[in-house]
Structures are given as C-alpha cells and as structure tokens.
Length: 345
Image (cartoon, rainbow, N blue to C red; front, side, top):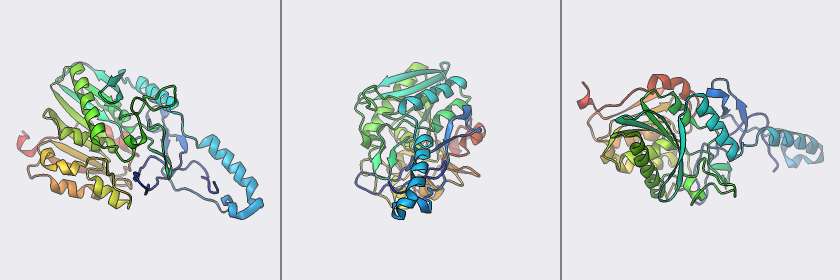
C-alpha cells in the first residue's frame, strides 16, 4: 500500500460496490484512550485520513525509509483490537458499571450476545447495538463485526429503569476459536443485509426471550445508529412496544444511501416502509447536530410519512456527533419515555 495513516486518525469510507454500502465503522482504525469514555474505553477519533507527501510510492527510494517507519507505527498503534479483545473490553466496562449478567440467546438462526440488569418488572428496556466493525478497508468487509466502541452498551449502563437489557447484533461477541464470527455468520449480515428479514426476525425472537426472563409485559426499544433501524423494524411487528427511541439512526435507508451516493442496501428492510404501522408507537429520535454520518435531514421523509397523531418527535442534540457526545447527554435523555400527545396527562 502506498498511502498510510499519519497519527491516531481514522476515516469513514464510502462503500460503492456490489453488495456494499457506506459504513461509519472504518476505513482505517486507530485508537486512543479517551478520559470522557466510561472506563477509559478506546474511542475512535473521526478525523481525516492523512497521506503525507513522502508516503507515496511515486517518490521512489528516498521516500521508502520514512514510509517503512511510518508503516511500522501504523501497524503497532492503528491495528484494531481482536474480536476477543473487544469482547473483554466490553465485559470489563459492563462489570465496572454494574452491567448485570451476560448470556447468549440461541435463536433459530443465530446466537445473540446479551446482558441483563435489574429485577423483574412490567417494562423491560432493551438497548440494541449499532452495526459494529463492518469494514476493514474500502473493499473488504470485516471478518467479525464485534464493535470496538459499543455505544449502545454504554447508554444501557447509564439507564436507571428497573429492568434493562443490552442486545448485540448477529455475530457480535459470538466469535469461535476457529476464526468464525459465530453460528451461520456471513459478511452480508453486517453489510448489505444488516437490516434484512433474517436479522430482524432473530432480534425479535431474542426480545421475546429477554421479556420472558424479566417477567415483562411490555418492552421499550432503544437503538444506536443501525441498532435504531433494527429497533424500529422490530417495533413495527410487535403489539407490546411501550415506546421507541433511536440515537443517530437512519430511519429511511434509501435516503441514507442516496445522501452518501452509495449502493442501496438491497437486502435490507426500510423503516419508512412501515411508517403506517409505526405511527401508533410513541417514539423520539435523537440526532447529533454535528453528525455527518446520519445527519438529521436523512430522516425528514420518515417523519413526514408518519400519520398525524403526535406520537413521534425528534431532538437535535447540540455538540453531539455520530458517536461523540451521547454518553454525556444520556443522563438527561435516558429516562424520557415518549408518549402520544393524546395519551399525555
């Protein structure tokens, strides 16, 4: 490779090829410790990719030595943690903040990693993780989508409801010793089919299991990024959803891919197509004012497609990006419970 990263930077890449799409989870990976993250988790700096003049092979032998030196730095400092390391980091974070019990839910198609916290309660709040580490470079899907920065887990740990659960997406945290990401895992599940019927059905099945174990009669769904897309699709097929909240989530994936000028997610379902059904669900959608991955206008058509009735609102959070700022903001938003205007006291 003739170009490398200089310093602790990463960039988000556009994926424009057969079966691929834009993914905020990484063209290049570089990690730094951030004091504002719970437990000092590795957080990504979404800065630009830097290609120094001397990093091009076109500069010949005189540029070769600094290239090797910088490449050595990149390999040492910029490599993504292994799936096992990512899982250990998440479990350490959960333990430090009282993250309850871990379990693996065997659904019809996949094994799904989950955590539960709290006592039996009539309402269970389920947090659904984002897309995770979907890509390792412009043309290569990750072999394992376990997130490096599990934002949904961090938000779940800040939630003060009586019964809270965290649900990872298919093939996150379920890697096997043989190098596979888990049962029935394949790369389309975190790329072109990340919101497909197979994924949504498995997640819905896992919600059933979590509710039974909590003794809950109703479920509230909270999703970060693509997890909010999945949460919306689950809400559209259930009759026991008390409310829905999404954080930095694309709710019209066709508008999302058009915004980034990339290939459509042809194997995925689109929440806007279920707008008529979702109109009855109390919901609030949070967008970061600085979010360049899922800017608020991406969801304009979704909001317009909802039937009148005052069940949906959205909040633009000043200073928040796609990942940045949500753990700081969540204490103010985590306990909000959306209601339809007609049902408000």
